[in-house]
Image (cartoon, rainbow, N blue to C red; front, side, top):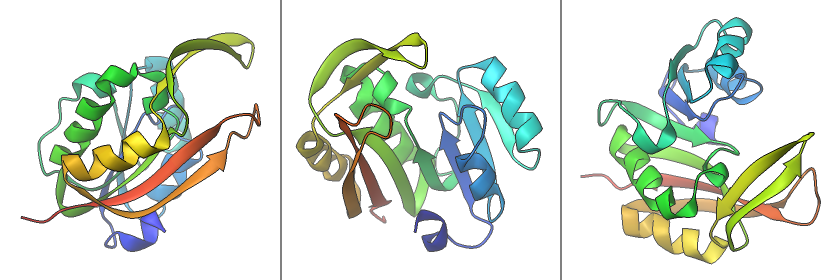
Length: 172
């Protein structure tokens, strides 16, 4: 739905793109995609796996990109690994990077979790997020109009869930 609602050949930011699959690869079929991630190793893989996209090594909490550059921003399973005290600032930065009426598709936490390290694919992973109601209040306060939201069960541990939100930047 996110891709379909964007104009053809839209400029899209994949924030926390990792190795570029499957999200960057899918979006690059229809749009001009810029992927950012803080892992140079992941970006090297992404450049090989999705040669039609552009990539930059950046921290989502300190994005150095021009305002009003993108028609769409998606961020899957990345924000939840940043301390939640920084989530509002990250989402507000996304808002400033979008052109008027731009779309954002975010994967956020659905349950309250201030900070936790948990096993993940043989290593320890940091998790931090608010509950879904907090995000559903935060997004309009930043300037987004909610288009849709859905809580999806975690595909790995089956005990938690993620809030997927599609929202549009209010126009000027």
